[in-house]
Length: 606
Image 1 (spheres, rainbow, N blue to C red):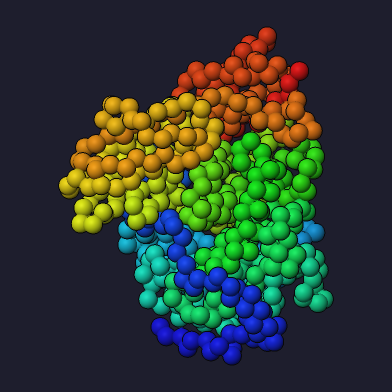
Image 2: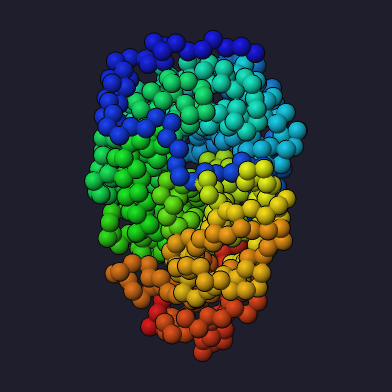
């Protein structure tokens, strides 16, 4: 299957894009093309997860995606191209509805919007498990997609940029992780069809750019395009993708302000604008732009300052003004507290990039908090399109599925599940960084020496993490263990002998030595209880956090308690804590252990 590559003239369609490319000269000072961050990820197949929670989520998502009917997946593409479209309609957001009316229902809201994400997830899953049927499905779907994509798809779609972005992601991941020899040619053909239907620059959410359309056509997300365009360029698809990435950088009104420390995020759609920070990180990685690195770091800090104790953010899918009382008010005004799989996916990418560039362990702390307290507790994806969407932090919270089938979070949950392994470990030329404490194994070489490290732990439900090394011969390298900022007590032992290596909360503890086969390292992390207030204006509303885990009070009516009572929360089982009260003990559970119970993340104090 051969497609003609897009010429530069065709690619840079119009003066506005060309002008944006010329403006890229602002990167000339200090630019480092092909810049590599100090830390690198491992290949997907180098990490094996043994955690029941992580494995179950991976297998659930893989099973659902592998079971999707291919005619159903291609149906909206074929319908919008005016071609025969056999097979059942998937329905929900995914299907095409020419009579869609946003005021009545969401059936047909975003046709085929998750297709590229599912291709991406399957490619990453193949890279993890080596299952040939998974790769076969990726290659087969890519070719069916190539035969079906048309200008009509973009003309009739409310989200042309959103969909093109996800298609790009799926195709470059197919190239990188599933070895699809035609992926770049399909990308070139897709890009040629898509570009005339896209704005020529990043358009803010809610801004009209398609005359004569209702407001539901104003919700596209062209400002997220650069990340995957930069990645396409870095993976060898061609310089035109770097140029296109530069053209869509959301500088005016967003990155420029964030780089100066201003909160340009208030009132903006939460998931997509945090996701856009990954485009800023890729601008730094591809172009060496310090401005964009500052924008991403400042954006992370702004989001962190308005996050819940779980690490989630964006109640009702909106970011808030600095110092606002909106987050506290959301505890009674909404059950839509955090757009979980999408938000977690954006958060994991951003913190991974920042950790790779800076080596700062606080980004690993943040990733860990979001993982254990939000997306790892998502309800399983169902074959009928039922998908977990919002985490609920209302005083009367509960878990449930989104009202519509196949929403956007059904696309990002499989990507999240595929990425746990590559988020767990990093490396540099001197050694191995352990970022997430998950039962798992990682394999790598130091020179000609093959090494594997295995984590054995029940963390975060117990204090200790043990690492076992297997290697062909003795070898010297650094082992760096993330010490969470909240850890006030702890130790590191090697072969049952306590070391005197530096141990400091909020940093990676580095152990430099010549390791031998069978060496064992034990990390002890005391997990203190602590209270985190919802906001400075409401110090009487607190969440209890144990180590990395936010604990949820289970029950219909949770009484007000004294702070001293809450801090006495005691672990009484593997995943259960209790707080003593005059009316009997109050059960506290982590988000991963909650099923259909009513709960409250935050407690009122007296």
